[in-house]
Length: 79
Figure 1: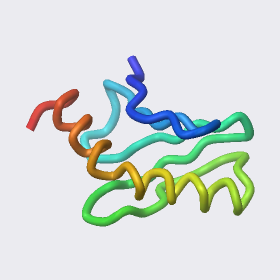
Figure 2: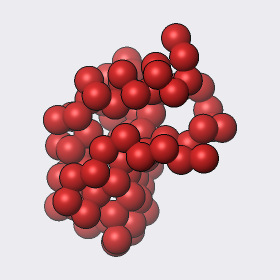
Figure 3: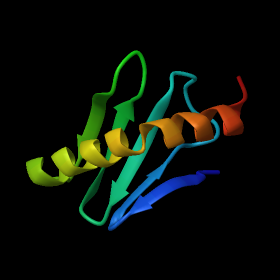
C-alpha cells in the first residue's frame, strides 16, 4: 500500500506502508523518483531519473507541504 499524501503538478508524494520506520517521503514524477528524509531535517536520501531541476523542484514541493506530510505520517503510522 502506498497512500498518496500530496499531488503537485506532475509530482506525487507518497509513502509505503511497510518500509523503514525513519520518517521519509517518496516523490514520483514521470521522469523518475526521489526519496527524502523528513527528520531531523529535510534531506535527499536517493533519487533516480530526475534532472537537477526536477529534483530541486521536488525538494521545494516536499518543503512546501512538510507539515501536511508529517501529519499524514502520524495518522497513517501512529505516534
